[in-house]
Amino acid sequence: MSTAGRGLHGHVLDTLGPAITAGEYPPGSVLRTDELAQRFDVSRSVMREAVRVLESMHLVESRRRVGVTVRPKAEWNVYDPQVIRWRLAGADRPRQLRSLTVLRSAIEPVAAGLAARHATAEQCAELTECALGMVAHSRGHQLHGYLVHDMAFHRVILSASGNEMFARLGDLVAEVLAGRTHHDVMFEDPDPAAVTLHVQVAEAVREGDAERAEQLTREITVGALHELDILAP
Image (cartoon, rainbow, N blue to C red):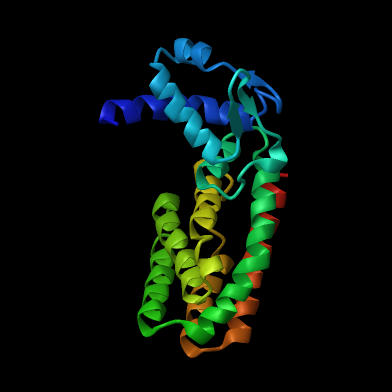
């Protein structure tokens, strides 16, 4: 597909995806491809490509003589980063953030403990660099710079765990962290205690202290849940 084609089907997805996840098209709603093509002023082939992407996320299913049907929410691929992004952009943001942060609290402390046992020297160095980058951007309203290092830090933790299932959750965690920043569910400057905890986690991983790495990371996730109680009740 040409660049223009990708741009067109991306435009359709940017409108239709959030509308589905926000409930504007309830489960069971039937969407007619030809009608959608007219609405978005795109060709049927562009519309079919957009539908295929939505099908890959399990948001819809396409059947002959029926059309494109919105699937029940329980069948959606809620781990898909794009689905997460769309849901965080909607009215259901507080519940979505809490759900994802609870998931983080169940996984990341264990991953940190494993990272303390399995991280390579290079991963330890990268983790320390990320933590120091967070410190450098933790004052003066530099949330976007802070976010870059925060996302990288948590990706390294998950990857350094040595567990391929945990490692694949890096994009999910990155979307949660990005969503909090982009939708102003963060204080103007990060909590200093949380910044310090990240530095301490990096130290614990480097020192091979699995119990301490797990406990400190648990404190980070508990703190994140507490922030949601204040900023996104």
